[in-house]
Amino acid sequence: TMEFTDRVTRVEPSATLAISALATELEAEGADVVDLSVGEPDFPTPENIVEAGKDAMDAGHTGYTTSAGILELREAIADKLADDGLEHTADEIIVTPGAKQALYEIVQALIEDGDEVVLLDPAWVSYEAMVKMAGGELTRVDLSDSDFQLEPALDDLEAAVSDDTELLVVNSPSNPTGAVYSDAALEGVRDLAVEHDITVISDEIYKEITYGVEPTSLGTLEGMADRTVTVNGFSKAYSMTGWRLGYFAGPEDLIDQAGKLHSHSVSSAVNFVQHAGLEALETEDAVDEMVAAFEERRDLVIDLLDEHDVDVAVPEGAFYMMLPVDDDDQAWCEGAIEDAHVATVPGSAFGTPGYARISYAASEERLEEGIERLAEEGYL
Ligand code: PLP
Image (cartoon, rainbow, N blue to C red; front, side, top):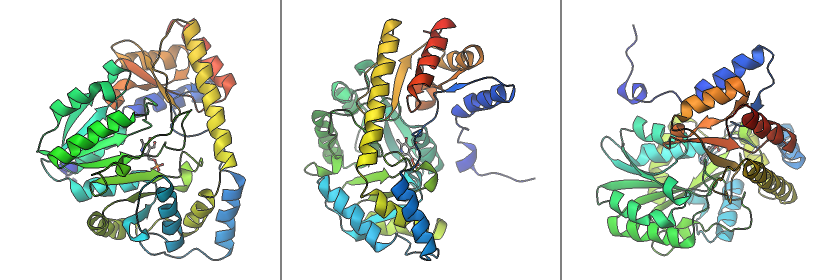
């Protein structure tokens, strides 16, 4: 018999799996499930990007690339980061198969047994698993009492961090709350990071998807350039989830260390996908259209919930919101899918019981149908 390692057995399978298993089962029985559990845009990848991918294949860009990614793309990413006020050379950037791989490599490079990592809850599900696989210990700061905003909870963050804290993960706009942290909140993070010599991951994968706010990149704050690792990717802004393309930028010594993990595991991101990424970075109108659609849907869902006297923290970015539900959010989500055939993700998967995450990356018709069914079945 096989014996499995601690690092893999101490990680739980994702709580979202139970919900998608139920959804699949119901659909197989012929049920019409309104799926509000997905974490991806419901738009096709913009045509110009698809064409660029095909052209790159036709042009023979099908071999290995430099491990860190083709220079043209790293230079284009450096330009994009410079627009956001982040100064990085192409040598300080690694292109990865998705932002998830970037995060995995960063955590593997920085965290070992017993190292303390601080998360702001609710937090994206994979941070916890990545930290546990690296042997790290989690300290979690709950933002649910402050409408998921960080600024009012800075005292709690201050109480949570110490000189023993190795790493803090900040994700703004946030999955699952849609919160965009204020400049004052980020300055608070900076002060604590500098005081306690903490490295900060700034996961900015939803940065392009905001509604009337311009999120500040944490690495632009004074004192943060040499302690911030900025992560971004193409999945959400350009509706490219299946292409698997992301990147991280940080201090050169981190890039050198993480680069070893990168070259000995994935080798590189896919060659022609990197060429499509170059085209994506030039794409503006299609992104603006998707963001405008998300904003309309956000407003629609807020209005519909308001009609049922349900108040939610209004998201300013990404395409999720947290719906307050029963304390036993797992049971609520299972009930909602069984009775109303509406799939959502329990807040406990993100460290925050008592909520369900709704993704509004769905058509207005399906969003209306979903909310109506939840109301009819007594879930609102
Ligand atoms: N970070 C956050 C907060 C996410 O929500 C996701 C995807 O759901 C990722 C990172 C990873 O995205 P990808 O690996 O598709 O680039």
